[in-house]
Image (cartoon, rainbow, N blue to C red):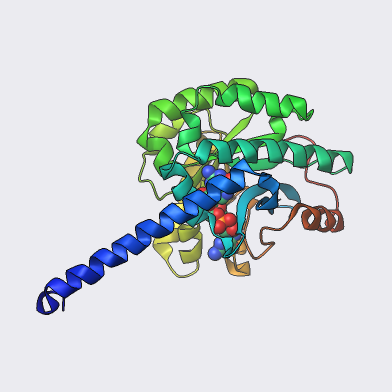
Length: 289
Ligand code: C2E
Ligand code: MG
Ligand code: MG
Ligand code: MG
């Protein structure tokens, strides 16, 4: 035990911390270099489709950032996004995502594929005074209508700094971009907070979807969240749908959109367009999240 090992344990513990700090420093340096160089050499967006729950049509896709480290291979966003946030790289990274998303939307558009894309924003980006102008410029320079873009922000961080979120959401809303609350249910925020935000969509966190089949409590929570969200005029997406039983329950609870490995994993842009073409037209000319 730690007590019996005495000083040695501390030494091991400290050197372990050092290794972790070293690791973070080395990753942030590599990430800095990736962004500073030709970012597209190491960074890429993967796209995971979202489906209309009732009709099964594609409603759009979510852009998920991927980083291929030159020596280590793929590093997960759960690892490098927090590092980017801690070391002040998230705005540059986020700006690349904004631009690349609009470029890809235009590329799909020119292939006759009318996609709608969700991007994930960090709360640090919401604090950027020129975020709204930046997104506006990116849309304009690629000839993309604002209602093709949805911005997702994780509930827990959105509610931590509700004033910042509110200000940014209002600016983005005026621009005509749609707003979505991601990973809903993990932040313990009250639904009345949601009324203060001009959000159009709510994504129920995967942890609730996972428990749907076995836990009546999870089912009651999801049922309640969907009903309240609908009462507030929000469209509801379930993330992380992996089984047909989960899908059937969610359809029964009138969830609007489904996303998860049951339908498709995140994939490169070209795979998504091939795949989407095989699925028929992208769902509904009218977008009403
Ligand atoms: P998120 O926005 O909640 O994205 C959903 C995550 O769940 C993605 O992980 C996706 O690949 C994964 N997923 C989707 N369907 C399933 C499923 O059926 N089962 C399971 N087990 N997982 C599923 P990913 O791509 O590793 O991204 C993790 C998180 O990193 C994202 O969570 C998001 O918070 C963050 N992230 C990703 N890209 C960006 C970005 O461009 N900017 C920012 N700020 N954050 C990003
Ligand atoms: Mg998301
Ligand atoms: Mg999510
Ligand atoms: Mg999530």
